[in-house]
Length: 137
Image: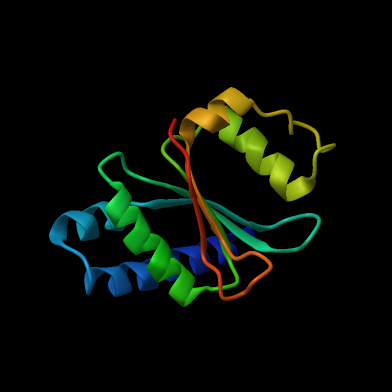
């Protein structure tokens, strides 16, 4: 099941990349093509579909907005978190979100998250609203 979700996420990312390529320059298209899907899951409370993506350092804010627009167009109900690094703390954050706060190994570092979380993409109460929250690490 996890393998299938990873393949689905990779397909969605490919579709978004194709969509993005039509409206961006070569620099953006190249950076976007190197994004990696870290994890995809349904959260333990609301059952929303989430995707954690690892962004290359060359992906600037303009390219991120182009990517987010493409992903939202292809999968408007899905939610995304974008990171510039991975490791044990991201694993813990993933466990917390996927399995709940009381799950074993869910005690992640807020300092790490603040430093490496680039943005979140999700719709809120108003389905027509696109929510892009960027953070500076």
